[in-house]
Length: 283
Image (cartoon, rainbow, N blue to C red; front, side, top):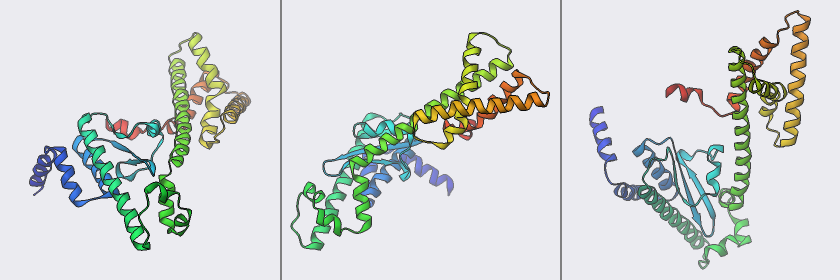
């Protein structure tokens, strides 16, 4: 039975995508079709992630992600991208990406029109244009709570604010990755007993910034100047306390302190860099 299902699934994946989308449209519509189409494309090409961006004259830009997952920092740059389908990895032919985008756009637009027509029929009102509906304050007040939330989610200003927040988060990840690189480099230079200007420069970065960022970066204070100042202050404070303890215990050894500092900061930097060690191990 399992072999029969596997053969059927493999045969199904070889069918033209247009035919699969037509078959899917007989079963799903609206948001259900959009997510089902993304799932179909992901299974067809073994994708890790798929995002479709739809543009609607009345409701602005809509972004849907495979499995209904939230839009995260790793796709923040796509918020302002042109409408279309974006895949990870980018291995899907442009023709098939365009076909999925067109099908999703058609189904979702039809869903919005049906939703508008149904509401107008319930109220016995003439069918206004979609743009007039959005500006109808009385209709907005009368909507159930879930419909008001849906409209707010569709507001393009919401996505612009979200894009700004995600870009900030992406910058934080880049800083964490840079400090992670410096931390690993200093550790390797130290255990390799390598001397020179490179070790001196990155050693200063280690002493002045990395320990503090390992602590302050986790707080996500959303203020770059404040985070920079606190990171430097915390770094100096931690190193002075550690040095004083080692001197008091008669265990002072600068090289050992440098190595232990690199190792102590490593878990926090990996976490803030959004590095999935399990996925790397699986590869």
